[in-house]
Image (cartoon, rainbow, N blue to C red):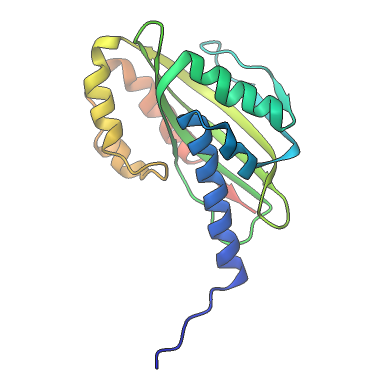
Length: 196
């Protein structure tokens, strides 16, 4: 009889953190506020640091209701075809996790594509069931003409979602000169991850 391999507590916690972070993307990208209940506690906070004036957000969101309102409901009124890619993934039992991200979406009003990169800094409760804090840093946010929709989203749909392979992103990069600054910015974002 084959013995069943028991999962270590650290490995189980790592899976919980992956699920938590995946639920964040499910909620925000898919306009499903209910998923945020599986990510944040009622008193969690999200702070947003803007290193660009190309997009606007409040500096801080306090509490689950405000997080849902701004990051899901209001966001989904402006954008569709939203894809958020993590550039690293957590492993083991962590209190904090930082990683780069790549995001792309379509402006509902104009059809233009917004694409950018930045950094997530997560802080988790000890049970790894909820995030107590999330800082979102937005380093770059570009606007690309609606006519480039097919080439951009064909490229994005070829990526692993939401846990992207940075090498594959860069190797398959679309031949669009307007994305050159993003390519360099993404390299920096991808190097910014840490676990602890």
